[in-house]
Amino acid sequence: MADEYDFDLFTIGAGSGGVRASRVAAAHGARVAVAEEYRVGGTCVIRGCVPKKMLVYGAHFAEDLEDAKSFGWTIGAKSFDWAALRDHVQKDVTRLEGLYGQTLGNHKVTIFEERAQLTGPHEITLAGGKVVTAKYILIATGARPHVPDFPGSEHVITSNEAFHLEELPRRILIAGGGYIANEFAGIFNEFGCKVTIANRSDTILRGYDASVRDRLLQISMVKGISFLFHAEFESVEKQADGTLMVKLTGQEPCEYDAVMVATGRVPNTEGLGLEAAGVALGKKGEIVVDAFSRTNVEHIYAVGDVTDRVQLTPVAIREGQAFAESVFGPGEPYAVDHSCVPSAVFSHPPIAAVGMTEGEARNTLGNIKVYQADFRPMKNVVAGRNERSLYKMIVDAANDRIVGIHMIGPDSPEIMQAAAIAVKAGLTKADFDATVAIHPTMAEELVLFK
Ligand code: NDP
Image 1 (cartoon, rainbow, N blue to C red):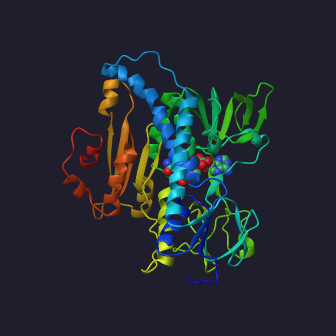
Image 2: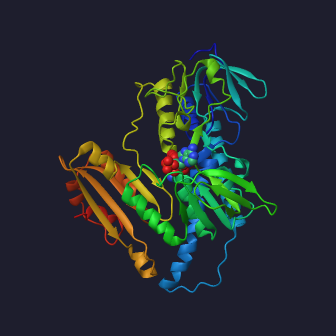
Image 3: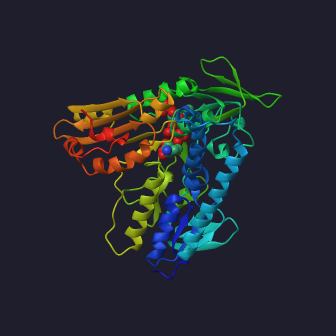
């Protein structure tokens, strides 16, 4: 590789995409450096998927302990210690951060624990003043929570702060109706907080199948979560006792102990010297890339949330891998296939989906068949919990091919990972029918659709 540069690859951002790209490039013999201004691991490991999932586990004990009585267990007085869970979660986050750092170290990737900025076509200047050069540059700086602009917006928290709360709020307002709003609504509700979700539209989880969304809304309301629609912030005022008086459009002012905003995430592209380097940005400030994650500047690439393609960790990892193998590996360059990406919402209960929703399939294919199983899981029946699961399969009537599966119910993300392989592989409803059920399971519904 080119010795006129200090490094073959300089990656800005050590999150999921950046770490994967750096380590794979280094494994192919590239001299790699990565700059990270906060903590190695990025959003997923430090303040996203991983600690969130741990909170989801912690939260679900509220129901499990209650249900245990129906299974013959005597449970004494139960109480929940938020600080204990919070600190255990953070301890594991620190452990994982160490492992990510170790992986980079094992691959001889140089880590600069400071902010980096492009100051020339191949030149990077670190916050401490050091200047280095690299043949290729990868931007993997991720995204951050978007906070709408309104009077008092400085008083709200985002998911970043939610992991570190000193104490649980008695009443929390969560703005937004997407992934983060619904996941944290479930978490706080199980911990005993009074949760209100307020969204600007009349829809939660836009993009998911309508029946599954409706089922989550119904179950969430039964669990005690309140929903406000067509509600946008007018103001948030901090009162003398520390509580927050919130005014939303169309609503009477209401008092909360905390307000959390989960209204989407914006790409981190400011202050990176991208304009000076001539890197083109899109309307939301995202870095515009081609199928190979290459920007309009030939030697500058970008992967993950900063490109605002599909804001999911496993996608960022694939993009990082594909970039590194394409640029530094021996094979032909290849692009990541962004179609048919399975996803999940870790609400209570969780949602999982792959492929087209019923609405999308009707619009694009016209003639479809929809199979549905609406059932109460055995565990819920014994527990006396009136909470029903819903599984849907969308089939192209022209060729019997399954084009979408949508589920809400216990463990649906775990079940979906396997089902998504079949959908991605283009299997048919007949293939599912030919598969013998595992009984008794919830997943068997997938091969028993009539
Ligand atoms: P989402 O895109 O999921 O949802 C954003 C919500 O905020 C929507 O309900 C939207 O309203 C509303 N909204 C958007 N812009 C504004 C605005 N300017 N003012 C007021 N409301 C607004 O975003 P999240 O923040 O929940 O999550 C960000 C991303 O992170 C997700 O898209 C997802 O890709 C990823 N993520 C994935 C998770 C997972 O895989 N389980 C978990 C958490 C995050 P509406 O659509 O109704 O108009």
